[in-house]
Amino acid sequence: RFLPDWHHLGKGAGGSALYGLDGVLTVVEQLAGVPLPASALEPLVLAPRVRDYSPTMLDELTSTGEVVWSGAGSISGKDGWVLLHPADLAPVTLAPTEELDMSPIHHAILDSLAGGGAFFFRQLTDAVSARESTATDTNVAAALWDLVWGGYISGDTLAPLRALIGDTSRATPAHRTPRRAPRARMYRARPAMPSRTGPPTVAGRWSLLPERETDATIRAHSIAELLLERYGVVTRGVVVSEGVPGGFATMYKVLSRFEERGRCRRGYFVDSLGGAQFSTPAVVDRLRSFADSIEGRHDETAAITLAACDPANPYGAALPWPKSSAPDDAPRHRPGRKAGGLVVLVDGALVLFIERGGRTMLTFDDDPGLLRSACASLAATVKRGGVDKIVVEKVDGASIHGHAFADILGESGFSATPRGYRLRF
Image (cartoon, rainbow, N blue to C red; front, side, top):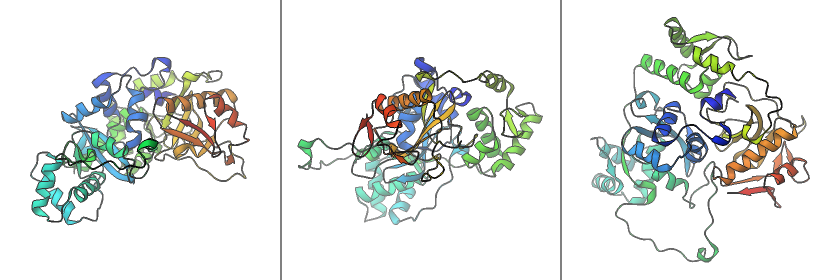
């Protein structure tokens, strides 16, 4: 229960205490350098944390240079891992660039941007065309996104990223389902309109990302401070889950130095996680306030639905995944901090894990009250647009049809279909 609250979640009916541009910047600082699926970034991560969140808030921060966004690998044809960085921390929080099979178009884009400054797509295409005669809008746009996901370049707005996620002509993103065109328009093609600015997926200005900090000591100290801010209590599990260079051995040395200087405290704060835990006195006092029994608190406001890879979800990182309620002889489905996966926590306890799209659901408790609260939270997430659609086909390895859990889904607003139990935004 501590970790979602630490991330400004789980405030009950009142919602998050954060709001406005300052709230968005607070969240960006806490999540600096964390890879998140682009399709989950705003609806599942930012919107629940900032009460009045609007995409224009993040765009204002990126266009003014206070926040930088970067890619860290493609997930599907239209989705990928995205990181947010406060501008002053970007050199230490940027992910390493990926090795790409560079074509002459890729090299021409990097050469055009190497002089500094930011280019609109049309300016960039003209500059690339001067270097490479085969350049067209299509292949320059494709190469541009290769370089984005490779961690080489970025834009001054997230509008092209949103356009990419909403582009129904490409593969499905991790958390989004493409919208079908209205029936009246399905059989007539829309004429292509010429544009001097390029397609929406390349809107805004593009530039090279800042240079990475090369001093390993500076990077290690900065990452240690970020981990304390992000998790409150730093354990081996969270360091491993973040893929920190040098692993826990490096972080242990740095945090031990912090302890010697009075900047943190080492102790046995969370049961079963060993004595190599680091925190601060203020956080430990706050953690103790969550030590009450959770028994009897099965109301809907105590349930939270999160992206499985959200740092506010402790399972699979600080805490191990608990054993699911699936019978031992059931087909093996394992939870994981995967793109597209969702978890539902009730008073901090893991109750549901939902695979991408909802096809497979795992339960971790057989208490009807907990399950109803979890399903109500999941349904509320779909209804507010956090996820476009969920179709539950299997629960704990068994078909949902005829399963006792189907009644609980029905009470939460899911409808029975031949394929499974479905709820749409």
